[in-house]
Amino acid sequence: MNLLNSALRVLFDLLLYPFQALPAAVGLLVVSALAAMGMLWVFKRTSNQERLEAVKRQIHAGLFEIRLFNDSFRRIWSAQLGILRNNVTYLRLSLVPMLFILPPLALVVAQLQFHYAYAAPAAGDQLVLTATLDEGWQDSGEVPVSASGKPQATLELPAGLVAETPSLWTPADRMLSWRLRVEQPGDHVLGIHIGDQQFSKDLAGSRPLQRRSPVKPGRSWVDQFIYPAEVPLPADGVLANVALDLAPAEVALPGWKVQEMAGVPAWMTVFFIFSIVFAYALRKRFGVVF
Image 1 (cartoon, rainbow, N blue to C red):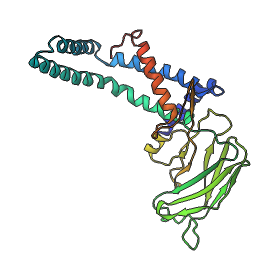
Image 2 (cartoon, rainbow, N blue to C red):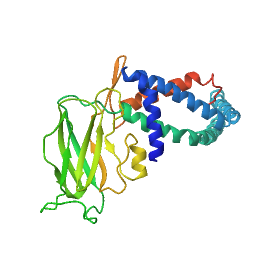
Image 3 (cartoon, rainbow, N blue to C red):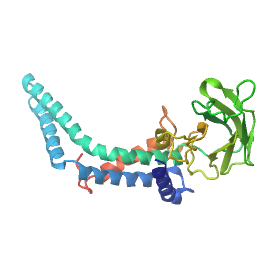
Image 4 (cartoon, one colour):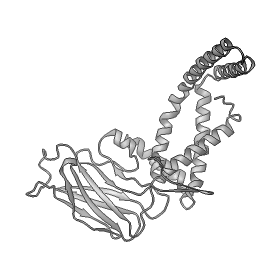
C-alpha cells in the first residue's frame, strides 16, 4: 500500500502544482472534468450500452402507457410493475461499470482530500498534537515511564511552533497530547522521541494548496488507504499513529462559500457537483448511455 501511495502522491503533486497559487475551485474544476471523462470512458467500455438503451426505452414506454390509459386501473398497475422490473434491470446493468469505476475513484478522492480538505494553519492558531501508542506498548519495555505510569516522551518542535502545555496522558486511549501554537506558518516537521525511537509528523502551511494530513498512519493498510498523504510510521515502532486537529478548508464559488456540511468536506461537494455536470454535458460526445 505504501508503494502505491508514494506513486500517487508524486502524481497528484505534479497534477495540482499549476493550481497551487489559484483558488481551490479552479483546480477542482479541472480535476472534475478529467474525472468525468475517465468515468465516461470506463462506463462505455464496461457496460452493455445496447441493453441499457433498450431498458430506458421500456421505462419510457411504461410512463407513456400510464398517461394514455389513466382510466384503466389494470393497465396502470401493469405498467407500474413493468417500470419497477425495468428499473431493477437498469440498476443491475449499471452496477457492472461501477465495480470498475469506484476503486480508482476512491484512490483519487483519498489524494484530493489531503490537498483540498484542510486549511493552512495561520499565525496564532492552536493545534492539538496526539500520539497514540500501540496496543501492548508496555510489553517491549522500550518505553520509559514515570512513577505514575505515564510514558515519557520528548517533543521536538521547529522554529515557528510552540508547545503551550506539557504532555497529557490518557491511559484509556493510550494517547499523549500536546497543545501547540503556530507563531510562524511554514512547512514544519514535528519530532517525538520515545525511548530510543524517534517519530515525525509533517505540517505543511506555506501555501493554501498543499498536501497536508491530520493523521500519520501506522502499519495498518486500512489506515494507510484512508491517510495516504504521508509515509507511514515504522512497523516496529511503539506508536499506532500521530495526529493533528487541522481545521477544515472552505471552497469559494461565485456567490457561494462552500463549507463542510454534516462531515462532508467542502471540496468533495464541489468536486461531485462539477463531475456530475461534466458527465452529463459530455455523455453524448463519448457516446455513453446512462
